[in-house]
Length: 311
Image (cartoon, rainbow, N blue to C red; front, side, top):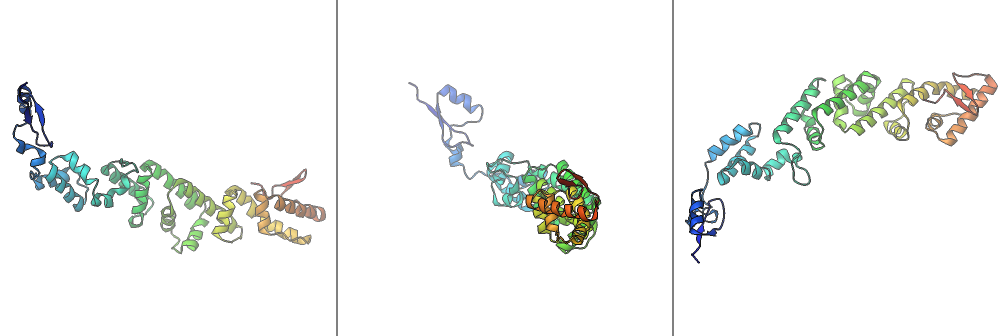
């Protein structure tokens, strides 16, 4: 049996043992019989750092200098663009700048360029509403990327907030000024709201709570945001709140004329379907009807009285 020939390749450690004919074929495509060409014995081979830096600047011009330098350092050792960016994505400097792009399994949500582009779009959306200082929004932008919220979806969320809070109920501006201690300008109030949490569910919930509070405030009832948050969680909607609070004072006053004490919490409980509160309200209404014959805008139907608290 003919002796086998050892052949080496500069980017691989070790060697292959092949026949003379096969060795010649491999030499024609870059292999060598010289063991010094093996990666294991040529670790001192380096590539031009300036070339790597130029490559980084051409491919990733939006990187900061620390990222560019790290890429260039990787290029010195690899001379390969794919391996250089791959190594960069495992580094601490990349983690600091773009760590929010990595899923739990190590895959990327999107490229660095796509992330930068999305954040620019988020900023454009806020700019449309006169929000120009994005300093306090940087972490929120990263959260949006991490939860894969597209620029279009973000635009729709922000439009929802603006239409339901700023345009729909101006009273909300006063409530935000009170709760957050900030100047009650449209953009200041709006900025405070969307910076609280941009997750769709939480946004809608907060909007509903503030709308309920606004309806109560418009009718002269002021308690606390926490109380209205509890009512919302128990099922009170803005529509029910409007009917409830607009009729509440008249019903409370009417109850006092027949010697009954009726408080706001009873009316709120009845609006939410609480059995005891509903019975208490029905007894009070029956006394009012019996003594005064007043309808207070309500229509009696069987054992139920409608129109006072129903949404």
